[in-house]
Length: 136
Image (cartoon, rainbow, N blue to C red; front, side):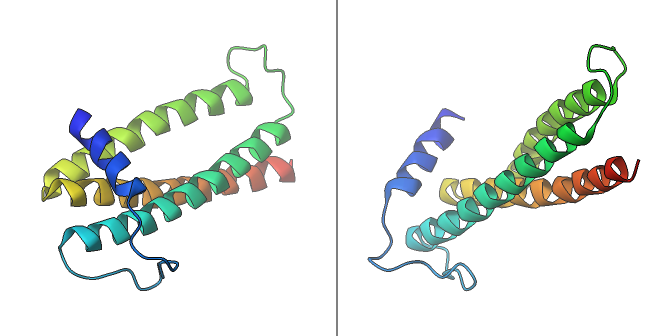
């Protein structure tokens, strides 16, 4: 795991080109430069998905009008559920990454892609909860 942290740092510090990377057409190939380009795109998607999730989560918390002091309040339940989901997401992506295997530079790419995908899926669920809460 320590190696992955160093690899993430190394991949994120390396500049591919002087121009912006087109993430709609990420670089192909299996070499380090391709991994770096794909990592940059995966991280861009992960950061965007995480921001949208956090914005939706904050709106949902704001729309829950029950007493947060109660043990079984909706707010307490969603906070607990979200914490459990984050633990699940991280464990799931670690598992997926280890299952796929491959070179270390691609493991971090695959993990970022997994986190972005599961985060986007969770945002849809939270959006549905928000719509239900606002309808009440």
